[in-house]
Length: 348
Ligand SMILES: Nc1ncnc2c1ncn2[C@@H]1O[C@H](COP(=O)(O)OP(=O)(O)OP(=O)(O)O)[C@@H](O)[C@H]1O
Ligand SMILES: [Mg+2]
Image (cartoon, rainbow, N blue to C red; front, side):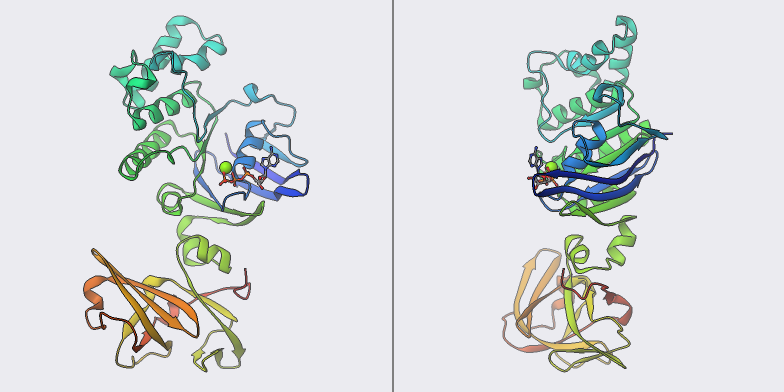
């Protein structure tokens, strides 16, 4: 069993709280996506698990074993960091074999394992090439092969795809997920790209200023963000804030949203409907259409409401009834069940 668990983990650099009391379980064999703004502690958390960073407080368990006293090389962890450096003067096969040599795996066994892993990452025929003779995606796969050839219990990936262009990145995402499934290894994956995290992960966690703000299955967090930071960070959100009255939420322009019991709600851009005629729904408001943006299949409309920008996305053909140029007041409405209650008053 290779579940990873951190308990009350804190790390300070002078006044900076890189990690602030983080408690989290990374399930055995799961793919965990770690998200957060720059400087939120993602790399620090991976480095602490790997053993490169000594936490000031808290504990780390791999399997059921605490790893405090365990050196980096004995933690049995595979890593791919953002600027993974392959040895330029070694061949692909030698790069992959390096970790096995360090562990004194005998020659024949070593060659067999290198061949297996190169097949797994679909680089079988390229073992004799030098890194300079590979494409970006192929180099990336060598780095993956190198990380898993030692059969680690845990795989830590720190933005491994960020150097790749979009098309290759998507291809590598599929590849990465396939490899992870085949090997069944507990994986912790850091990314800035929320879409990438949603696509790949069984579970996600969101860090902010060293604190774990939310974690859970991607859909559960997206569908119930609970606080404004998570709503905005994972996807896009229009946040409406007002005063709670006995029969609903009263917004600044006098609009009453019946049945809402929190001072703040989030509305995803895709749940909004715009119409010139007043809709027959209880959840609606009037806003000024500022801009209608065509970007292929999907269209975006930008509205000004009480000095606040609201955003709507919909298939472009569904926006046909709206004026092309901005200016007029239109109605925005949404299904009542689409209003996501925020428990933090919408301020974070
Ligand atoms: N060795 C260090 N010395 C001092 N401060 C550090 C050190 N390493 C990290 N920090 C600080 O700790 C905080 C967390 O850094 P960390 O690298 O974990 O962030 P991150 O979430 O990985 O960010 P990014 O998305 O930019 O990679 C930052 O404020 C950073 O400046
Ligand atoms: Mg980082």
